[in-house]
Amino acid sequence: MRPHTRRLLFDSLLASAAERPDHVALVTEGERVTYAELLDRATRFARGLQDRGLRRGDRVAIYLENGVPTVAAIYGTLLAGGSFLVVNPQTKADKLAYVLGDSGASAVLTDPRLAKVVASVAPQLPALRTIVQVGGDLVDAAGAVAYEALLAAADAAPHPPGVIPNDLAALVYTSGSTGNPKGVMLSHANMVFAQGSVAEYLRLGPDDRILNVLPLAFDYGLYQALMAVHLGATLVLETSFSFPARVIQRVQQEQVTVFPGVPTVFATLLSLHRDKPIAMPSVRRFTNTAAHLPDEYVPGLLQMSPDALIFKMYGLTECKRVCYLEPELVRDKPSSVGKAIPGTEVLVLDDAGEPVAPGATGTLYVRGPHVMMGYWNLPDATAHMLKPGPWPGERMLCTHDLFKTDADGFLYFVGRSDDIIKSRGEKVSPVEVENAIATIPGVKEAAIVGVPDELLGQAVRAFVVLDPGTEMDERTFKRACMARLENYMVPRDVVFLEELPKTGSGKVRKKSLLEGARS
Image (cartoon, helix red, strand yellow):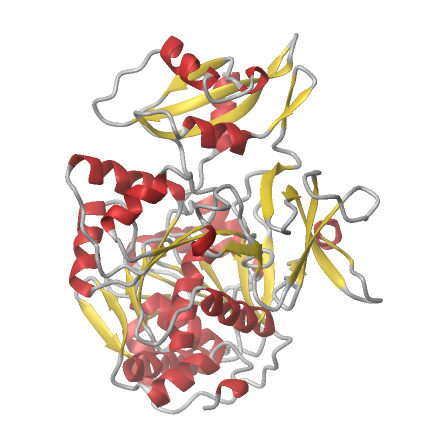
């Protein structure tokens, strides 16, 4: 299949299976699957869903740990004409019921343990017709079927799905830090463009071996799988980063060339490296998103992988990726997140919709084929994010994040418009304070929040995790902060923790920290 014919998200799997049928597509714990095998499982899953009544446009939830069935189900759902949503397996019953009910999912793929959770909420979900269970004794619930039996019974090719690039491919639910999660609607066209643009600027190819330790429910993790299949490359898929020593061993054994992570993953990696040097010479790319990668992490990463390029990036689920910094500029533009990804444009505008001057703070807007269709069933929230663009009828994404540019047009993240701390009449960027604290010897991780203060309006509070064996009191910590920050940015107080509360994708749960501060 020629590249220009890849208009639908599943076209990448069809092309890679045709061009490299015997190439290993997936490596998981105890299993290696070729592209021909992955396509076979996906097409059988597609036909099995169709035989059980799935229609074009139906939603299929995948409530499962990272693994071969998860990836096969993503493409199988698309081949059947449906759209998929991957639900983090850590999701509890109440939130699961909300997501399945909100999406109107007609089928769920799950495992024996999680099938019990699905069965407990199924009576609330009239649209749910099928529960597909991978392994174990089949759950006692209406519509339950064994995954293995579903695939075995699908002895014919799936019916043509009839979808076009504008059709919904996926719902990616946001973390729901401010209420119920929102389903980000992404079309085939959105996702085909995004996977190609990101793979292009990361300079990836079919011989890459891409690690993924992040949940496929997290769009950063999901796109590692999509890019691997798009390229015909190999995905080394882990369930998590809970056992970093095992992941490091897998990187070495499989000669991984691309190591995507978030700052918390890299902080753990560097802490282990300081105790016992780690060598991962095969790694040629470290990629980071979700939060700013502290500049002080770069030397340690390069000690582990001397030939690696380090990509700092910024993005939102609503458009996958916004910008990236060329790795050759990491030292010249250490605090920048770069420029727009290929084929897109970013604008930093003031409240009147006019471009701001270099050095001034404005709101970031994004234009391009990757901008979401909107939020599922939430027209008001959609209108809040999608604003009129330069051309009649165009909608561009308002990130509601604050940015600056320099004289060369490079972007600098200032903070969330609702995350900025107003203290002593000054605006404090939590990201700026966190980056400064990361340079303090002995600090492993830090998170900054604003807490109410009668005199200051808001006071800056630091939550800090120290490296194992490090001792530090509040006075020493503040002295180190004063050496790195303006006085108004220095935290009023500090709370030392064993670990920071995090989401399944590795982001710090600042809402949990704030709730603890009020208790």
